Amino acid sequence: MIDLRRKHIALTEGSYTPLKASGDLLLFYRELSEERLLVALNMGPEPIAVSFADESLSGRVILSSFLDREGEEVLDSIDLRGNEGLLVKVVVGGA
Image 1 (tube, helix red, strand yellow):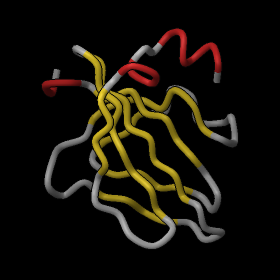
Image 2 (cartoon, helix red, strand yellow):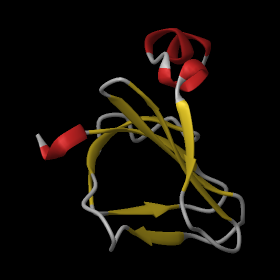
Image 3 (cartoon, helix red, strand yellow):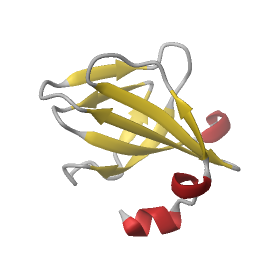
Image 4 (cartoon, helix red, strand yellow):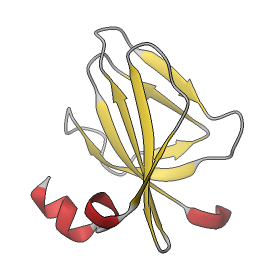
């Protein structure tokens, strides 16, 4: 995680934008310049599906708390296992 904080300055210096979530789910963006990172945390034991109906989401997982999803493509929704956290590098501007 320390290495990621060095590679992705948005994690330490970027703006924080919370997203609407409920229950055991915590979602927020960290953004700096052209870098946007999504942090998705399922704090509960049950799996949860997260869809982004209000906006298009496209990106790749750069870290999973289970260390098994790096590089996985994310398109408009995320399936989180119980007690899983994901860090997703979001494609800015739909490019």
